[in-house]
Image (cartoon, rainbow, N blue to C red; front, side, top):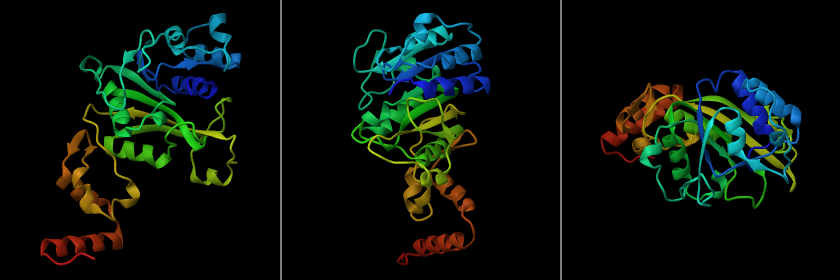
Length: 284
C-alpha cells in the first residue's frame, strides 16, 4: 500500500503526542513509496517535526506519481532502511518467508513499519518476529494493513484481536488502534466493535486497520495465543510463554499467572479439571 494520506496524518499526530520522541531511524517492511496530493497534510507533518516548508518536489505527489519513502523520512530527519527481495538500491535483501534478521540489525531501530507488506507473506510468524527483532526497547511499531474486503489484494486481512494478542504476550504498549475508511483520505477512527454496524462493505471497499504499538522490553519474541480460547484449552498454553514485568515466564509460571486472572465459576471449573488430571481421572 505504501505511505498515503492516512499515514502522513498518523505520523503528524504521533509526533505531536510525543510518541516519536527520540526516534532517529526507521526500518520498513518493503521498499516503500509515499504519496499525498493533499499538500496541507504534508506541510502539517513537516511543521510537527520542526522541519519548515517541504521542498516542492516532496509536495508534488499523487497515487500515480509516487516518490521513494526514503526521501520523505530523510527530509524529516530520520535515517532510513528497508527490507525487501526486490534488490532496490539501498534495501536490505531479505525474504521474510524464510530469513532471520541479520545480527547487525537486531535491536537497532526506533521505528519499524508494516505499510501493507505482511498480508503478502505466508510466514506470518517470521514477519512479526522480524519486526520485533529489528526494534530496540522503546521502539514504535506502525501497521497499516487490510481490514475488510479488499479481495485478492494479498493472502490475509487482519483483526484487532490479533494485535491485542501480540501486545499481551510481548508486553507491547498499544498507542492506538484505528479504522481508516479509505486509503486515499486522511481520516481514521478509534476502533470499537460497534463500528462494524456502520461500515459499508462492498467490492470497492478498502478499510484499513491502523495500529501503533511500543516495544517496552528487550526480550525474545513470544508467539501469542488467541485470548478467547485460553481458558478453554489451558493445557495448550504450556508452549506459550509471555513477557510479564520484563521477564519471560515459562509454561508453569504462565499457567499459574493465568489462573489468577480467571474469574468466578470459570476458576472453579478450571481447578476441578486440574485436580482430575492430577489424579488420573478422565477430563470431560
